[in-house]
Image (cartoon, rainbow, N blue to C red):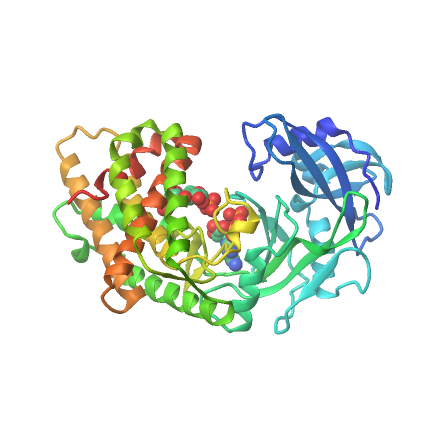
Length: 470
Ligand SMILES: Nc1ncnc2c1ncn2[C@@H]1O[C@H](COP(=O)(O)OP(=O)(O)O)[C@@H](O)[C@H]1O
Ligand SMILES: O=P(O)(O)O[C@H]1O[C@H](CO)[C@@H](O[C@H]2O[C@H](CO)[C@@H](O)[C@H](O)[C@H]2O)[C@H](O)[C@H]1O
């Protein structure tokens, strides 16, 4: 094990400012660093590419977190990637170097891609491949601009590598679910081409029985359009035709909602077939309802505007607690329109990592598929309200008409999605379960919006205000 000797202040600034850093607003220091390995394929004049893992310790006393830093080491400064320069320092393995964030560097990413194409037989970094696709090594890499929790790098229009930033020992659900659905031939995910992992070590450097999963390589969906963007475009069409109904306007989304419902049903069926399913007992259902109540109590401290609705929310959770049993299985866990991509070959679902705020140990647990359905129903509520907000002044004469249209679009798409998903009438128990998950998601969203987009909190709060009102 090599301990890196990096200037901690440069790395701290880099991590604190990175878009993928999940601890925004929390004071931390880097209290440890470990070189996980060098990506093979170094060529003369090219960079050495290494993956370091840094330990972040937080001043609020929260648990340490581990972040992956792929770094490119050059003897000379590189003008073309000046925007990704972390600094110059002496590295134990490579000497005094200019160090860059490797995901911005085509030369570094080319080494990485070659390692997937021709995996090294030994070394701490293990590149795994699924059969069936020959990687295009002539491509150039491009870092996706809209990176959120991770960094995604496209190799031409052939493959896409997602570099996970926050690392927890154990199987990453994005990889394990993509592996199972790819092997099962699912039409609704981008095929998995491979992944990178390395043994997890104890603090003394001894191997454990777990791995650190660092990156996944998958099919690049050439013709993809984000489902959220498509939904917003559909709502804008509707608002532009003030006198027409959703089903009369070009750009009606209902056909797409139905196809999305069918796609999710197929993904859930496949997950239920390939991963274990369980029947939760009445006591376990009670615990599920209790967890929702706890989430509400915590949210009430952050979002005072929830208070007038708390009793009706608790009633939804009481109804859930009265159910005899609930079937659970592996699910997506954080589904919304922004996790769906429309391609010429139908809808694809991406990002099976689960709810970002939950620890990995919870994100891999089976849950009810109605949680994913509820996530989509909430998203159909968000889209028209977001477009409505872009009109700004809500006092003009057409504001009531737009509000009516927004509700109509949401209702139409929720209904078509749900009908296509279930393919039959919901049972009374399913209605109760779905209502509880919708309530839980809306409560989660109020906290998410207060923390991330405070001016949007009215969107989930208005939804919460409608829950349990007959
Ligand atoms: N296989 C793919 N092909 C093309 N674009 C993709 C693919 N997978 C994801 N994307 C795009 O990349 C974005 C980020 O992917 P996502 O898995 O949600 O990353 P993150 O974990 O960083 O949120 C998505 O919103 C989507 O637009
Ligand atoms: O995409 P992430 O896994 O990071 O999910 C988080 O961010 C989402 C917003 O990007 C957030 O989704 C909420 O806003 C969406 C519109 O921007 C809307 O479509 C979703 O229905 C709504 O929940 C998600 O909750 C959060 O976990």
